[in-house]
Length: 626
Image (cartoon, rainbow, N blue to C red; front, side, top):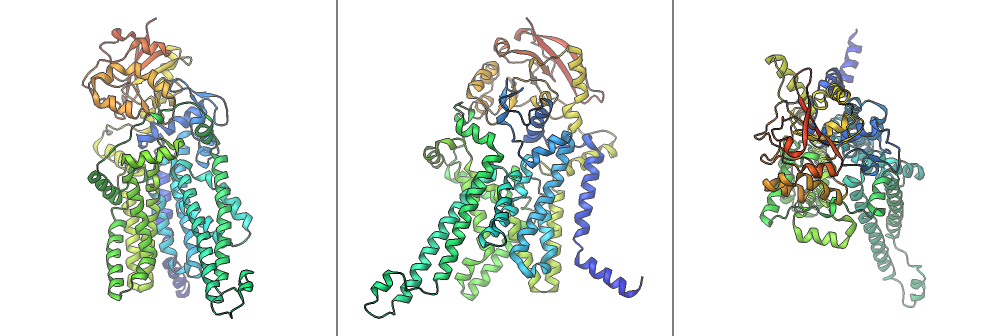
């Protein structure tokens, strides 16, 4: 290889160095999660105990596209209460085995986040995009990796994509109908309750502002033009002949408002089409759901301020952008330095218009909304004004903050790139450290970290951790043997000492379950079964009565015995359950990880004890005495 060729390669690597960590991470993550397969360690909370089991139930019952059918948990829940089939994420589970679909979803989220960020950045940067390409890709990469709520990871990652589409429509670029078609399809990667309703709300505000701005510009322009006309020209003014130079800006503002009005309509229709089951349940069902009885927190003003500060610094686990490690410190330092320079220059107007400052204000606004949601008078006012939104969490504007944090970080990187060569290397160093922070922080949904750590622990210590892997959690082979031995044919059952999702995943119909939207009447019926436990533990009673999404069999002594570990931590082997109420709802079997000392007292008899081949789980099977 001659020197000229070597120099070309060196320049290429210098220009596109960011591809190496990105591709390397993808290969490593795919190798780990597909290599270990179902022996990987996957986040349980609001994931394996909820959506993965629901997708598997839809697969087991072939109900993805069916209508007017119930899914066999919580004594039969309408299929309409589960995720829509018109979703790219749901499509993965229709096509692939559940674990494979889950991993593809994690990898797909990163791609969506990275390329959405690239599209938006290229649109905003224009011809200067090439200069900032490494910062664009690496920032989008960091944002895409963020370990968001897995079932709605696509919705989080695709926020820049939505902004890009709306920006194209706002500018009126290209063939207008193409952008509207793309926007109509956007809900395939979004979610109405988390992001869609807020995006539509922001669009309404933007349209209103553009119309008002257009009217103001038009009136101001004509007043300036006509103020210098001769007396007697009132008729001409009345006919609108006095037109000033601001009329062009006013016209552009009105046209943009009309284009965004069309976008508002198209996007709203897209959400209704893609999530027609959700809208049908919200608008056309007269069933009273548990949303009507949910009691939200009511905090004092000092507590609200503390909560605002906490989510500003740490975010929330469903939208964990890991910004507190690198992004937050960088933004705080830059905010202080940048605005100190504005103060020194006495240029307050420029400070107010600085995009970075506006992003920080938006972030703080979302944190304030999150805190004020727990201010009961305000929440009650919203529910009275819009009754269908009773129980709806309007504080979910906080879900936009991860994108806003990384957008703010990019602005810092861009300005460092503009400052000089060594500042460019500083910017690259900051974003690389930010990426590493996201990868190496053990958050709730960092499945890559959990799998690597737990597998390394097993290798070096010669024994596995107490936590259950995906395979051990669902224990498919164990439950297939149990079902064969007891001759299971779809009878209603319940779980004790572990999540009902395990039974649901394995094709066992359950009276218990986890769902945030089901019949209030069933909540009350199920309460009769667990009343003896609720009477003994006040915290559990409040947890169920004030929320109720987890209709589980509770302990009468411990706050929680639902375990995702090999060891079951229970101080009492008695089951506090109303056996007659259990039978009245059709309960026939109880699957327990605890051998019950009072089974006879609650109308149950032990019919089998089963242990997984690797000893990770033992299940005691009880049948209701006839």
